[in-house]
Amino acid sequence: MTSPAPTEGIPPHEFRQTLGRFASGVTIITAQDGPERRGMTATAFVSVSLAPPLILVGVDHRAGMHALLSREEVTRFGVSLLSSAQRHLSVHFSGRPGPEEQVPWFDHEGLPLIGGSVAQLVCRKQEAIAAGDHTLYLGLVEYSRYTDDDPLLYFRGQYHELG
Image 1 (cartoon, rainbow, N blue to C red):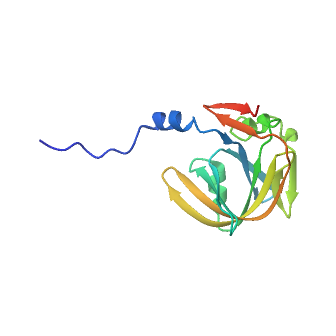
Image 2 (spheres, rainbow, N blue to C red):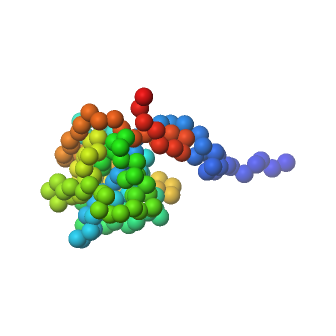
Image 3 (cartoon, rainbow, N blue to C red):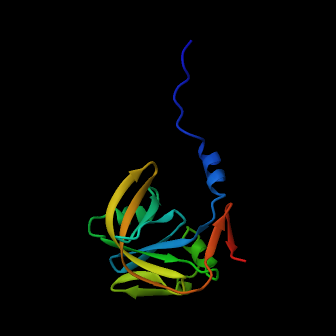
């Protein structure tokens, strides 16, 4: 009798359904691409360390942002945590773009960020870590600002608000 072949973990659908039960904020990852501002919706974002201030964001290999952040000359990226009033921006940057003039861009030292968001971070790319079908980008936070507005949340494949 032969032993069963080792498994590759649970199926992707089951993994997505299970982790969909973890409520998370919604972020837009931004970077400058020559004269163009680029952004991507991401829920795979986490604080890593207070000292030094480090964050981690996961970017799918198929995403245009992955190709941009993979470039050596791209040394910084932005993270904007969306407010409850910015659901349309999450949709815009997740591949269903609306009118570009509705994006409240602002620049901090040449890096695009999203205005009106709950918080913005400017990060220096520290490390890129291969992780399955994603790359994890570790960023050193060089600048931050925040408000007391309510965040946009994502839970079980849908947007939610606090309260």
